[in-house]
Length: 301
Image 1 (spheres, rainbow, N blue to C red):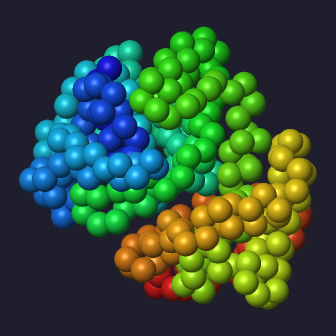
Image 2 (image 1 turned 45 degrees about the vertical axis):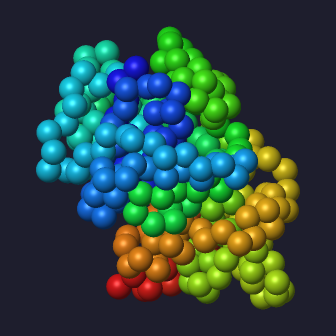
């Protein structure tokens, strides 16, 4: 299969590396000049969960390079602010039968993708795998997890993508009701990402004082109230689930904290900010998420 990874950040590099290793014909596409240069000169270094390290010679493009054509599948793995641009690149590269899939954080990315590539060609996935960029050309597989592809009316592409990822070592399945999985992941992100970015702490440090735990709890409970009001069957005990993730990834740098450290745009608007908007539409107060959203936005100004 001919695959284009639009956005070679942590997750794009991880998925791209594993799919390339599995023998797929694949290109990475990235804005990050140092990342492009390092992969072109030395290959992508991928540190696996079992402690082994791969060096993969993957083709990588920057946005000035001609795009490959007749792409079967495009992964949208950019930050949410860049979704429209990545969708445009994917649309230009896709074959007539090709599709694009987003597994990005937050809400609303699939809808934005569909406006560019078309409703029937825009797929949605959810993954709880973790990845960390250690530097240009180097990524660490930080944790395994569940990956699901939303079912389509005809089901063909969802099944193909799930099989493709599973063959590459990313166990995946087709899910008829993906909204609960999307929101379960969102609630974890709501509780961890903004707080670690604001406080400049690793994930596990959120559990070391009562004040931090209270902020995590209040943010997640607000999000859970919105989800339930929308009729979404989220998993029980979302606060405990979020704390468990923070504990299991205690030393990790969250993606939002990394964005703030690098001085680049965060995804706050589609994570905590999305809860504020969804809550307002349902007349559900979300003061903690509103505060966290403003604080992260202020750090980036």
